[in-house]
Image (cartoon, each protein chain N blue to C red):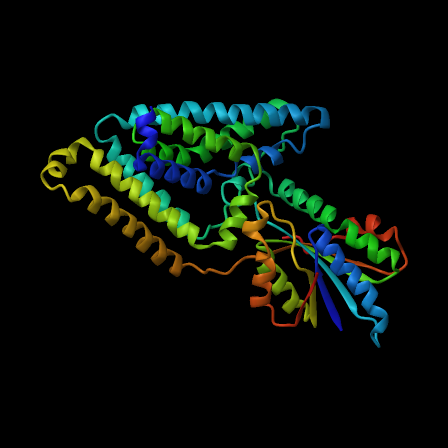
Length: 141
Length: 257
C-alpha cells in the first residue's frame, strides 16, 4: 500500500503526517510512504530571461526542503522508511499527477494548508485535489 | 479633489487600476529575490534594498514618460494596439522561454543591474495599462503607482494563488485591458470627429475591444496544448532508522529537468 502525504510545512500538514505515523501500526503490512512538496511555479516566462535555470531550481529545492523538514524529522524519529519528492507547478495538479504516477492508494493531507489571505484561499488545494485525484483522499483535521 | 472622489467613475477607475496592477505586476519580486541569492549574506540585504528602490524609481519615471508620450498624436493608437496584445497575452498560457546566456553575477552591482533591466522589461505592460486606465488623471496615476509598489517588493505568489482559485480573473483582466484599450482609441485625435458625431461609439468601441481580446485570446489558447506542467525537481528515498540520511542524501537528488 502506498500512502502519499503532500506537505507544505504548515501545522495542518504536520498533523496529517502524525496521523499516518499513529495509524501505521494498525495496518497488516507497513505501507510505502511518499512525501511530496509542491513549489509554486513563480519563476515563469520573463523571469527565466534574467535568472539562471540553476539558480531558480536551487531556490525551489531550498524552499522545498524547508517545507519538508518537519515531516521528515517526524518520520525519522518514528524510524520509518519513506521517499520525499519536490515538484514545481500548481499544487493540486502536481499532487494528483504524482499520486497517479506513483500509483498511490491513498492521499492523506491536512485540511488547510498555508494561505496568505486565508479566508479567500482557504482549502483551495484540497478542493482541487478532491476533484482531480483518482484515489481516496483522507483529510486530517 | 473632493468632488472627484465622490463620483462613481472615480471608484470604477480605482478598481480598474488595482486589477491591472495585480495582473500585470510582473515577476519583479521573484527576480529581486533570485538575483540576490548568489550575493554574500551581508550584501544581500543591500542588493534587495537597491533592487526594490531602483525598480520603484524606474516605474515612476516610466509612468510619467508613458503619459507624456501618449499625449502625442497617433501614439494613442499604437498604445491601444499594444494594450490589446497585452490583454491577449494575459489570457494565453505561457510558452517557456529559456535563456542560457546569463552570467551568474555574484557582485552587488551585477545583481542590481540584472534587477533594473528585468524591471524595465517587465514594467512596460503595467505602466502602459495604468497610464491608459488613469486617462491623464494625476491622482489616479499616483494611486496606481502606490498600489504597484508593495507588489514589486513582495511575493507574487498571491497573484498565482488567486488565479489558481479563481481562473476567471484572467479573462476579466483580459477584457478589462481590451476595454481600456478601446477607451484609449476614443481619445485618439484621429477619431475625435467621428466619435463626436456618433456618441454611441463611446461605449461601443471599448466593448468591441474587450470582446476582441476575449475571442482572440480564447481562440489562440485553444490552439495551444493546455496541459498544466509539473516539473519533478527532487526525488529521494530515505531508508529507516538512519536519521542523518536526510542531510547526506541531498546530493543524490535526481529527476531534475
